[in-house]
Image (cartoon, rainbow, N blue to C red; front, side):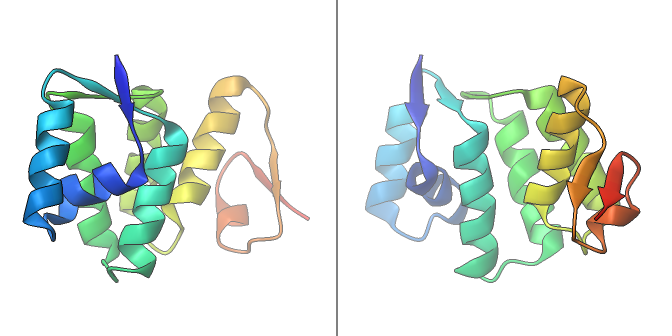
Length: 126
């Protein structure tokens, strides 16, 4: 299966460049794999560059999770991170994902200096 990078995902979500969006659609038509890294970078770009709200980020991640042509790496972990982010939009999605990855791997607590993240079960404020 082919894989996609961040800018392909951004085009699929934002549709801000019709030519690139069409090329992205054509590339993933037969299926594509999305790494955790590409997903995390995409969410960062949507927030930092496109100034998307937490609610808009939730919608974008849901769209990727439910996309017929995309297979997300560790989709169950992504879904758990999305559930956490949905209930705690003040957290960064990447923090939610990091916590859920550590939980799945059995490597808790997740040490952090982040005050908001440290309030989550499975973390330890340093």
